Amino acid sequence: MRPHASNDPSSDGAAASPRALPPRGSRPAHSLESASESGPERNPDANPVSLSISELAHRCRVSTRSLRYYEEQGLLLPSRNAVGHRRYQAKDADCVGFIQRLYGAGLPSDLIRTVVQEWKLPDSAPRVEALLRTRHAELSREAEELHAKLTGLEAVLNAVTDNS
Image 1 (tube, rainbow, N blue to C red):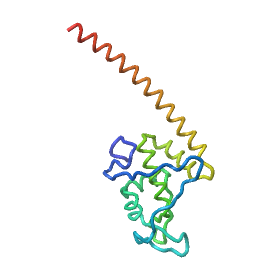
Image 2 (cartoon, one colour):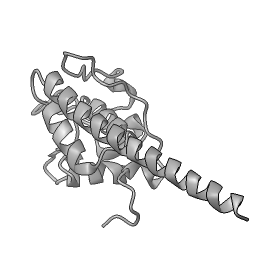
Image 3 (cartoon, rainbow, N blue to C red):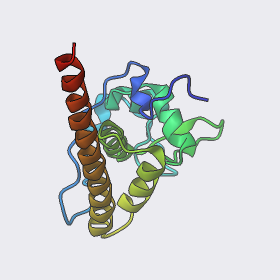
Image 4 (cartoon, rainbow, N blue to C red):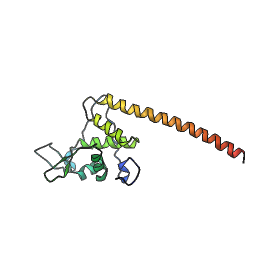
């Protein structure tokens, strides 16, 4: 259970890493700095590089709590080693950056889950773009409604202050 109402798990004090969205019409690049910089474990059985939860958190400048939350939400799906510890691929750092950008844009968790699931699929850019444009249109309508309410409230305030 989350202790506050915010949808943004980075609000636990971790700084979000500014990562660019994937280019239009392409898959995310999943490339990072040299894996040897943070000393990730070499695992000959799986991917050539895997990261612990603390290594990924450090690389992405988020808390381990945020990464666990992303897993709970179905946004990240780490593998487990023989003793049950989470293991991440280097490309998961790009996914974390994308998730952070989506939370930073104020998207709700359920929409983020849908966007991230689509983003991981081949040729996903048009579908991801459609989802985000739909949300943009919804927020634009809400902003217009709020602006109309503010204008109405200002009129009432002016009437009240003129009668004082």
